[in-house]
Length: 82
Image (cartoon, rainbow, N blue to C red; front, side, top):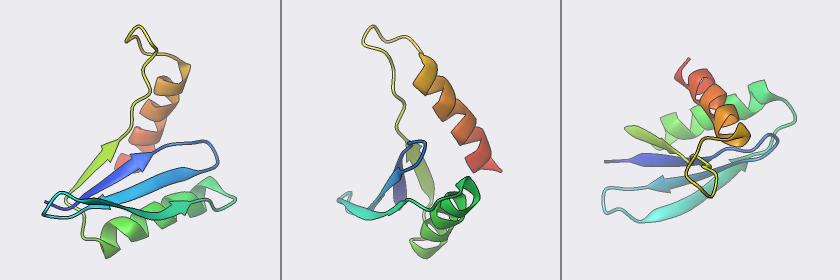
């Protein structure tokens, strides 16, 4: 299964690709000035790598609870689904 890993950040979104063997390799990060351009970059990587699944890093607090950053990731995931 081809997977794209996503590490969300407000201005920089890290990306990685795992192939059928399971080896993850970095992809160019989405660092465009606008959110719309960063989403286009991610979309292009998904199509280019023929990704079948996405994995998004979810930053929980040290005690395992959902904090402010995790809630921002929730919003990002909803935008990604669109």
